[in-house]
Length: 165
Image (cartoon, rainbow, N blue to C red; front, side, top):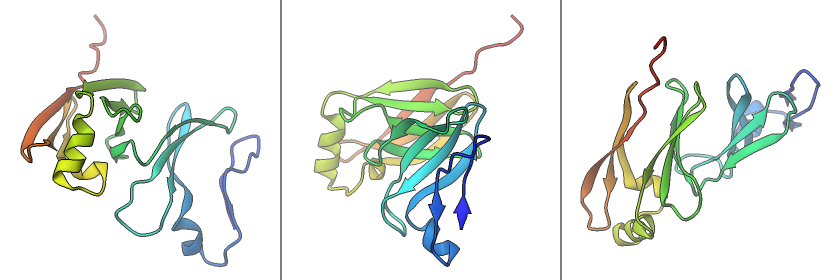
């Protein structure tokens, strides 16, 4: 049995399956601990090629404080501590969350631009529109597959504030 607990012994996940693999394929899985929350993913199906929901659990209460649905999720990197997602289902504001600072930077898209790009390029998932995602200390860059079928260079600037000034 695998349990995830906070100091108050709130069970976040319990699996009675006899094999660990049976517990990890679908459902809630721990990703990383941050100062104010625990980051989990919820896999709806096992295997590849399906985006998970990303779930933020309060370290203080053990309750869910935020959820990014699989339909809004674009990309994330636990080593570089960032998450790229759309802030809502209108797909007009692409958000870059820096887990270390909890700051959010954004890039705006025109209304229906994402929906049109999905339809015109006949992609199965939102994530298929984003290529060559690269994160540096100063920015996140990527190529976006436009509704005309062209790869457009995009950038979200995420310069950390200067300290000591």
